[in-house]
Length: 75
Image (cartoon, rainbow, N blue to C red; front, side):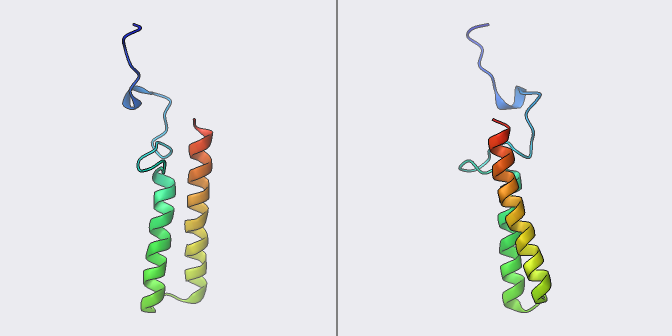
């Protein structure tokens, strides 16, 4: 059994949302960046109100910080 390696897919306790995907970012933090990018695009095209833009940016920022926190907590 000493020669066996542990794969990420074989880890039953690993959470999908906090698994590192790209450069240490997990799904939650990447989703936060996507929300913030969409907010910028919608805001610049004039399709959202100022209050909605602020709310979406706060939600995106919260997802990024929570994703970074949850990722470091799961290690």
